Image (cartoon, rainbow, N blue to C red):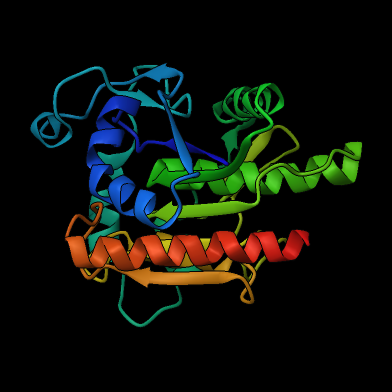
Length: 257
């Protein structure tokens, strides 16, 4: 089984593989047949001022066509996240963060999804998807897009497992626009077994929890590594995470039986 791996905004496939090396080693111990395929996002982007050291040397990529100048919205999002009131549901916090911002144009995301669909069509061994931050948002969107294609085109879904590191909820591409899907506003659900990996000190944890809330509660696992918006590397934590991912994959196999 192959797992398609999608990096965060301002990342690349090579760097993402290095960031996950401890996790990949742990997975090989519990399931040596699981193969991970790392790809670059299709769009070159540039970190906003003050973040170049954080994201490391280029090239930097995004899965989405963020805007005309190749910059994302991290410099806009951080102040809003820090100003959000405590005690609200993740979905309500995201609505406050977005405010009156209009829905984005669908071309922001549609080419990215079409590209991933082509990859699945070309390689039927890809049965899992793993993403970090923006990559987790895109990965979850891909799973729901497969559900849509099954309903509209009769295509059998290929993805049977989702692993989300510090993500954001999936996107709805509809009527020429794209927006977040939130569990208290829709009936859609991510139907495959999932592992949502969060950090209790992540300033973006509400995005991760809103993504987790979009997953089927009977097959969803929430794994807290106790840190921030980063990938776990502590050997004990990573071994436990690898076991959780293996358990989710076993659930997927049971569902197929």
